[in-house]
Image 1 (cartoon, rainbow, N blue to C red):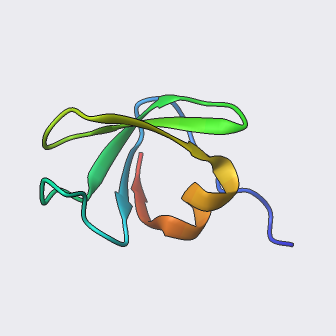
Image 2 (image 1 turned 60 degrees about the vertical axis):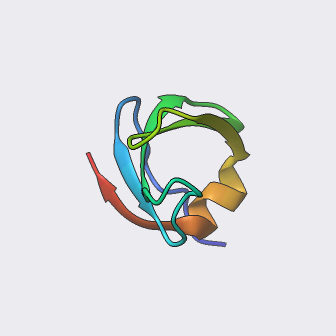
Image 3 (image 1 turned 90 degrees about the vertical axis):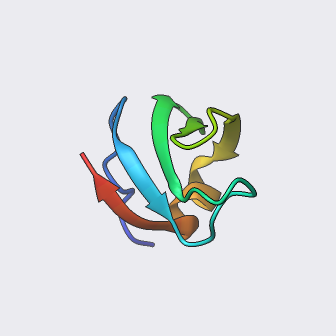
Length: 62
């Protein structure tokens, strides 16, 4: 099992699939077992389990 990806508040992550609004960059707004993300394009907020988020991440821009 690989070590967890280091994530910090206000990091911007790029996910593999785009959001319905067309954006694929998200800002981290909550950390824990579930990670809170806010879409940089439309402002939508979602919660994802850390394990699922780590699979979807393409790039982290700290």
